[in-house]
Image 1: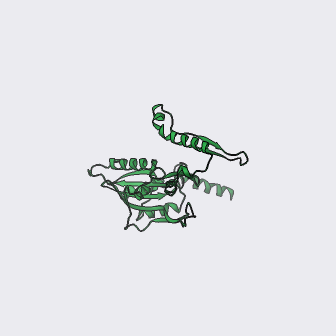
Image 2: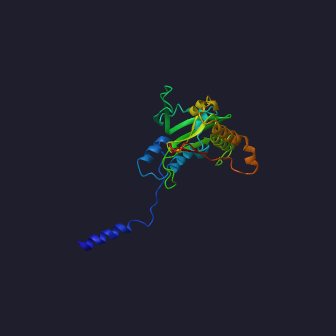
Image 3: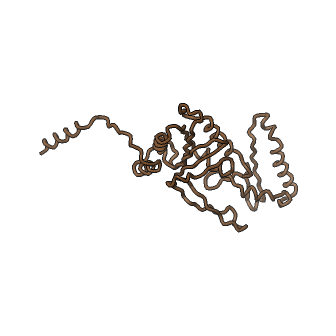
Length: 264
């Protein structure tokens, strides 16, 4: 019994090579189908799966991948800088409908609903250039970016020549979006829910504020005004001497309250 079992195990082990060749899967009927099949098994890199699927379906397009965190194409379009239309022929979108509570409730604000895109295809237009943009949330394997959202930007070269890895319109679009996202457009940066967010409502609320509304000791108030206005007036001097344009102040009030404010 033991001898027969060992011979069978040896025969079984000899039936396999040291290396196993894994043949590539044949793409399904749609990109969403590939993602669905990919998600039903062990996930390693969504980027590889979606990139291969798109290159198979759009062989005459260039493909560029960007992180939505630092290149938010949809926010760029929402600001009126481009046009993004959810592809009407593509009915396999995956959107999370989320409620965003109001920043302030005293004025009767009730919040609003937003779509958090997990998978969607957009017809994207910017400066007379047309793109196809797939927005996909997936896994990056060991890259430390699990759950991040990736923009897959497809563009058909106008010269109809050989397809290069990148095109000038795609690079220009990515650069424009990144530069726009770094700037504040009637917004104030607020650190909330673990990250910095741009807040337009807060910007609107402070437009009505005036130094005359601040209740402080007059001497301290004038000193505070001088510090704030002087900092903004001296920006060119900071730049001339290559000094970072920032300031840090500590304001301490009555000892009984033991209250201090750190402002940067």
